[in-house]
Length: 318
Image 1 (cartoon, helix red, strand yellow):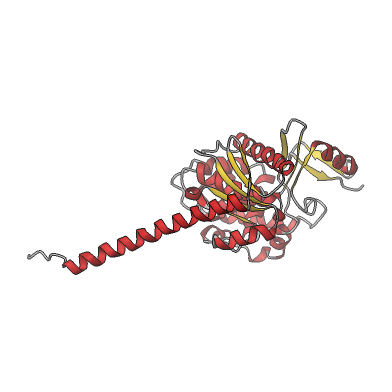
Image 2 (cartoon, rainbow, N blue to C red):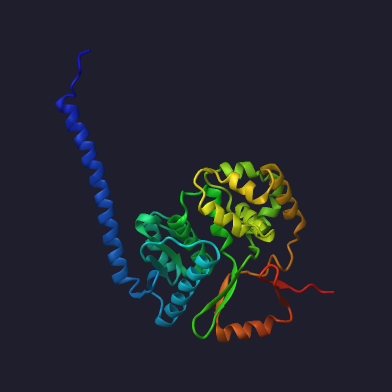
């Protein structure tokens, strides 16, 4: 068989295509570097370097003291309680003090989220709008922890489910800056949405979805937490290589089939009223010691600490 040699024109076209492709990549990289350099010089002019983070912000120094302690405290808490975070270099944090300073940068990065976003391992940046609350910060941080530490990229329902679980919390910083924090609270707005649509929920559809409904997947993770299975699920899925959609690991940890997990989960959703426990954490918070003591004095007749769940609960009236 006669071998056909590619024509000179074909070779030139292929070479040109590759040159254009790599030229675009180089331009985008240069453009991002230039944009970020201008950002840190002109807008986010206050910088803090910690053990695990490089924080750039337009907040004042006192506010940055607080966030420095919070970031490092959450990193230490998560690494201790869930899995060792495999971060190889400090994570850049672009922390905007308000929506007006956040929005122009988010648009320039091609993001429509008013809250914040994670730019992935290559960029190694999370972007946060402080106006959206601390829960956005932990959500994006957990995406980063997963990306740096899981042996393979998890299914999207796992990625979003774990991140949304960490949106609601109560905590405080003591006078030495040590963080004490508790997770496992309802979302005061996500759970009512899930409860209202519970009859249409399909766990198989959630597992297969490219963009699973975040309220539903958070509810599933909270349900696992209430049954004492959430940490085990997270730890196992972190080191599992072959379970592409994570359904095998879910069934292994739970001990039931997908159909039975769905049935019991939906029964729990239906049986849980929209009560004071569901509405307890309107916005996640971590208070400095003095403010924490004031908060506790104002709420100690209403709340109690549940040793079993390791969260604050609302006292039931007799």
